[in-house]
Image (cartoon, rainbow, N blue to C red; front, side, top):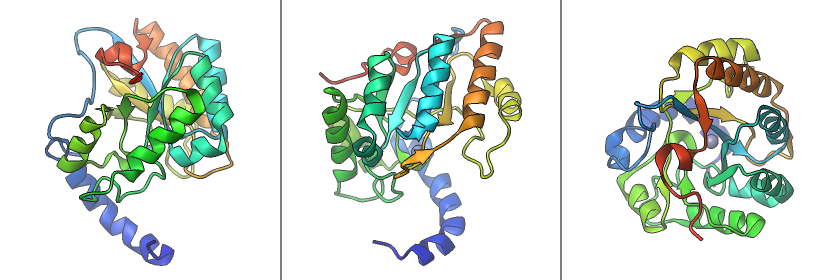
Length: 240
Ligand SMILES: [Zn+2]
């Protein structure tokens, strides 16, 4: 375990370097999807770092009211804490993908250790009875050996091309987030929101829910169809 103080001091320096190196196409060997076909006005809304009480539930309420299905990339440790939230999302028809066991930075970098993947798949299977076929790396960090590890486990790597600013602290107002995000969306875009927080019992995200409602309305006015990742990319949601 890394000393927390050391980690806090090192992160502002090492995280941008890690992101520059590990979010490139070279890092994933071209295996990761960043968007779908640019020829159709279809967009996938995705949600990272849940499940939690509060944030995930508000997003599920909003998607339900809007009649939209989303794709949730879930943390294994949170799944142990909130299996009922996963089941609610799954039962409503949303797609559940994996987002590692503890959202650590080092999992993708480790040359041999795949437990961050396997433990997450096990917990998601325990919660919903299905093994995900979709994986989003925490921090977006990938390495060639992590890409091979994921492929060997039957997982499709799902990155994104539009990241909403909803993980900023403090979280911006929903209308500002929508205004920032909307012009960046193109046909085929994969949009990321954050509905949860690693290891949180409860994490409220009212501005994310507000931005989501405004974005759905605005995209529909622009004749976009809102679809899940399997629909956008033509890949399976689950392995069984
Ligand atoms: Zn994440």
